[in-house]
Length: 273
Figure 1 (cartoon, rainbow, N blue to C red):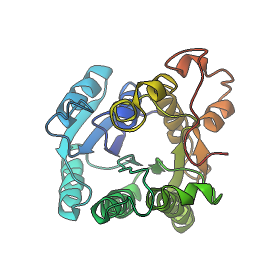
Figure 2 (cartoon, rainbow, N blue to C red):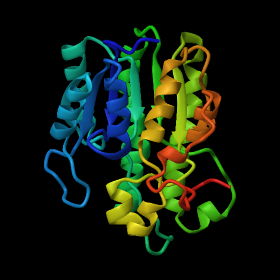
Figure 3 (cartoon, rainbow, N blue to C red):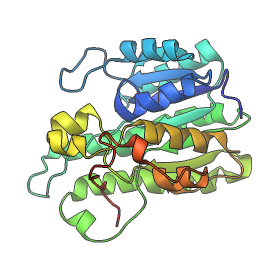
Figure 4 (cartoon, rainbow, N blue to C red):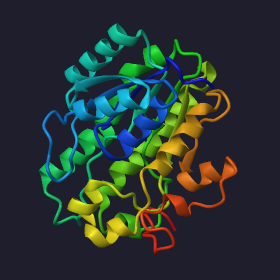
């Protein structure tokens, strides 16, 4: 499938995984909506919607940077309206924006619980809801959500239950959308990395330098996302994919080039095994 002229609405595309996916699609000529609230650079995370848009244009795509906090429905509606005014349609929604707190029940403050559910669950739902009328008009519409396989091993619920249920809710929404919109050909799939991913958030907020060095580059998810979005929306839907699973199906058997430190130890991501 050609991506030239296709429009993808990507939340949290100012940095990390979202930006990597945006750059991959842009290299194939896609239009990218950089929908995020990063209008000023956070020194811990780097990047803004405007610097990401510049990189997307340099990669060969067209970019529209729109300040958008997906907790705010009015901002989502404005972003969707601007997308249609600029590019005329939406061919794919990539729900990448997410909040994380790996904290136990007593350590999870109410405001942190609310933040994770407002962004991960409510925000993902509202972005998708308001894009669906335009996805219906696309020839190959896709919803792709960065969320994990559903693993009910109690250990994933025991130590950071609030975060876990917010991410699992994203996956359950994905399965629901796949069934709800199957008859009209809108695909809904989820994607999750086998290992931690080398982003500024991992390095500076979550795992530190050690975990950063034991991670893979965001490009592994970009390549996997590209493979999913390349497929017919009527044929590939209702899957909670992992990155390796997708790429193995594409004939890739070695993943060492994705490692930040090739040949080094890799940290397995959450919710697996």
